Length: 412
Ligand code: T4K
Image 1: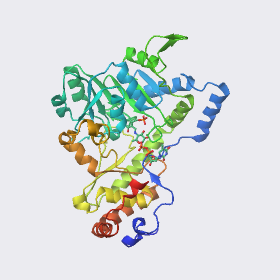
Image 2 (image 1 turned 135 degrees about the vertical axis):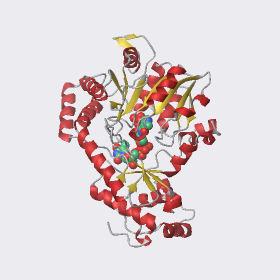
Image 3 (image 1 turned 90 degrees about the horizontal axis):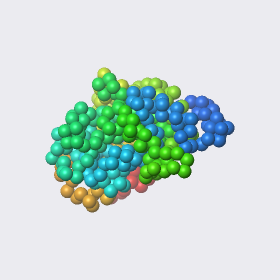
Image 4 (image 1 turned 60 degrees about the horizontal axis):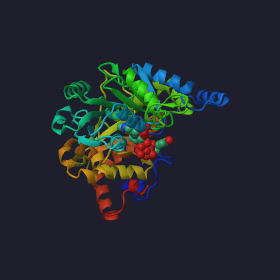
């Protein structure tokens, strides 16, 4: 990267880009390619490509072992898995859910004509605030869905106690949390069920994929039937069902990813530490931290930008970085409650979500994973440091040059 000496060296103002190739938040971690291709060849040789084949069965067994749970039911993706488990648990009416999550968590409910009732998160964990739930309960409330956001666990004990006291089902969206522990116990066996995502951008990927994990034998049996059209035998359908199956190739990718999990964690952790180290002297940039007593997948490098200190806003910094081909992301801005159809359905919600509203205005995720090198991270940190140390100048120039210009990331 040509060193940024003046603001005119910034790509946003016509300077050379820092990276020829885009650095993404979410570039997939790819395991041992030759091992994967071996598995794919074996699948092709046996011509069994899906429908609960040997690779899916092995993948389910391995995930259940890793997560310390009795049952893993692999699915097409986590959104479908959420939809099917909600159906299998006969959840209806209203469900308490955070707005600070990926839109899939809310859509999976509304898709089944269940009303998501958005609840604020607490300012420490950014997960569902148990102290804000009871005021939202109505006779229609049938469940709580917590999200282990960015791999950090929800307040599981409090949510469990609440759900029991009010006879509610409890599901955890653990899309970010495979391989993470709480009080030393692997995420996967809490609540009535937990849902993992193995999407390409996730810590462990199966191209597209998800799973429901549970210790409940009856629920697991029901999920297996529901994800396969309701079949209980040849020409024998005994209940409503859909097609939520994982294919053999996806399972092969999952098994291969599992074999390089320790390396991915090492890389993610090194990246996370390097970012924190190199940006430790930049005021106004706070890092989301992970409990060092627990296991984490460090899949997300999450910062909070305090514009009153950095002068340059989170969006201006993100715009500047996108222009340099660094695709930092403001997950999960603006919050599900401000996205459709929820914004139109519940126009007054924002007022009761002050923590969510504050987080979505400040959050910025930085590229990490095995596709990002230590040199990349240094360059990205230099860029951020340069931007913050020239905040006034950049703000003025943006004001002069680009008062109404769409932000780079809105044009892409
Ligand atoms: N619950 C939570 C809390 C979730 O975060 C998610 C998914 C779900 C439930 C639902 O899980 P799934 O049904 O998807 O299994 C991406 C993912 O598509 C989504 O799975 C994920 N959360 C979300 C956080 O991120 P987008 O809309 O940001 O995707 P996109 O296309 O912008 O990709 C993200 C970045 O990754 C881009 O900069 C490009 C890069 N990328 C992406 C893909 C697919 C690559 O470099 N290579 C790739 O193959 O949603």
